Length: 437
View (tube, rainbow, N blue to C red):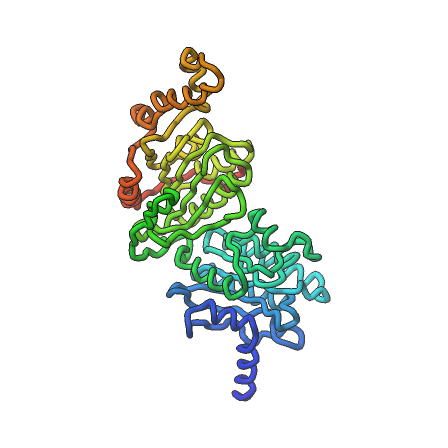
């Protein structure tokens, strides 16, 4: 073929929406396309794929091309994705997928199903080895949706659709956000690409290297802000899964320039969604050796299955685990988040923290029944006073259950020192395939 025809084909590819999406995502001039001229039927394949850098970090990415047959899944598309995943596994680089497709080329029949299955198998093989992020820009239904939500994080734009149901039932952004399928909302496609770029610096290339460090910033330190904002580097918090599980907040952030995972419980009892959200996040951090800092204020669990999953996630994790009791740590919540169940490396507390095997009123009734012999309207105040005197962080520290008690203004330095101390942590584990909890 003449160079003129080759250049014409290149111009055709470069004019597609998928190609433009990837050039926006990658650093300028770094995109190197993979299998550019692969055909699907009489036209080009419905996906553009390749590698490049984002903020200087090598990344593989693909974008379904809605300009070509609506981005429909095909055996040609599957072959391109298989090659991309194979290269990502060989080189240890993250995979970002940009989804926009009307469905699949059904005329290809079982060949199409086989190709899709092989892509899913490779994506599952890569899970926990390299980070995977899905960015849903348009329709993402049926098998496409299954592939997308298999990633570590999903970013979804306002007008996109994501559902196993090919009719688009329960496919809108709000539904997926409230059900934990989507980690980050985006206003439109351009914002989704920007959000994907913003996520990259928080990720390690693979499970054998740490996330890159950045220059440390002073925390925001604004009065009235949550304790996390007062401790982590200013402007470094990346909020995830905000619409799912109201009693837990999970964040990626930086502490003195180092990427950390932050779990903060917000008081009361954890519902099932909150426990599941925290468990999923802890498992992600553990897979990629991101330290987990837990800020515990929790009186127990509403959901037994969720409690078991969260306790197992913490207990099984071998990454650095630091817990800070900032409110109440009661019974099973203490065990799961800050005690022997969590197997925390270091446990700190604020001076007014409370540690108890049961809720404070029950503890007062059991341990000091005479003091609770007051009118019902006064019992809470009496129980709170009892907790302050008998269930304090200082009492727990005296019994060896808390390693240090710090005021808020002292806590950042203590956490930075603990991270430095634990940087060389190594934990041998029992040989097994995987947990079944």
